[in-house]
Image (cartoon, rainbow, N blue to C red; front, side, top):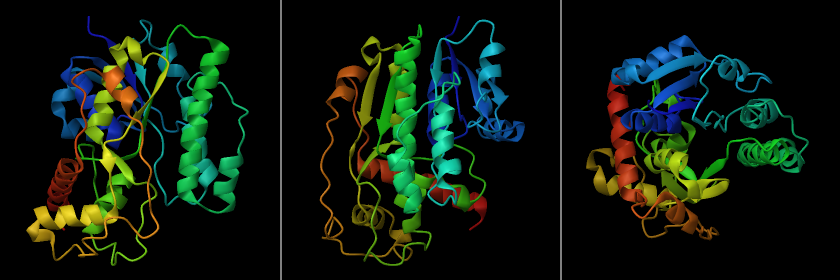
Length: 316
């Protein structure tokens, strides 16, 4: 019998690649989305997934008992749970309720409430800083998960995947340009959709990236890797900066040069930016001898290609 996986937020950017990988490996997947319409949109794009996937509907992952019925109604239980449902939207108005709370409460699948310090969240809210709020949401959500593991001592183990900026080809439903996921939007699409007008003052919230296909594969490999048990795994492929994105797009897509500013081709980093590196040794140790990262050029080319296909569907 095929292993059974519960996947949250299954129509999201990362989760769609996770779902594709699970189906390709013949897992049986129970996938959560917000509504029946969202489920149908996924199957319309990927009809071959239907035999391996069943959907459940969770309108609000931040609700205290959001996931209770999922587990109550699964008599045979799940072999694995992959939790990806979390907001990534830097344009929200209420940072606490729209960004921080859904990430933290959505991670507390068992309903455990935490009493963690809100200092970082308070800073983000006081300064109306969406990036800081996103950072706080990730930190607090993970802390809540580890706190549960320590206090409840469940029979299962936990692996946390920590990627930096995630870019890569889009395979989830994207009905309009405004629906492009946040990271692909600010790190790639905004360079050729007329949002960015000049390089001066243009910065990223972070300066390292990882391809979405690597993120998805890491989630899947971690399911069956004993070495991943109760570990945190940082996923970082390499550097990404506004000018690197510009240079790569202009060099590889001559038809887009009129849509992409030239910037300052030799000034790779914004002035005053000196990013430090990340230690990704654990990812290679845990994910196996064949583990490698997709490089920036391939990741960007595949991302741009997928967006150009979508633009034709949007009739832009």
